[in-house]
Amino acid sequence: MKIDLNKPVMKYNGEPLMVDGEKEVDGEKVKEEATFFKVVERVIDLTTIDEKQIAKDKVTAFKIGLKLYGKSKGVVTLTTEQIAYLKGRMEIFSTPMVYGRFLELIGDLENEVEPE
Image 1 (spheres, rainbow, N blue to C red):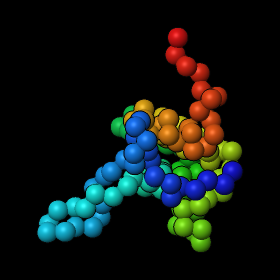
Image 2 (image 1 turned 90 degrees about the horizontal axis):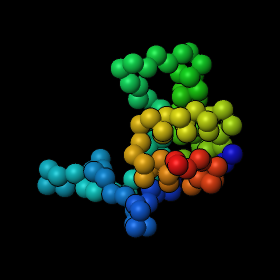
Image 3 (image 1 turned 45 degrees about the vertical axis):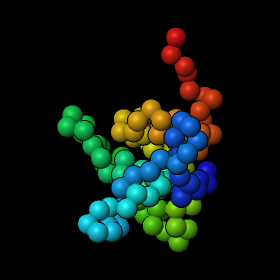
């Protein structure tokens, strides 16, 4: 599946989510749009205290990371396994809003079971 991770993460109201950027002006970080690129880059390297990643998961994360910085600059083609891996990482490490927006991005929001 081809995904454009350069797309901004949108808040519930449809406006882009703004986060502290890497650039500074007068000693203060400049706000920039949060993109799925930055979110994915972060969640593939996070772990919990109780989590023990197996080698297969580490390799999956590594391959996704390489794709992020490949020639396509954030427009990546991911396998079904890589999508499932990212979905699991997003479920653990992102907010409900970011997780829902990621599901929209991959076209999977309608497949999620709503709580009763």
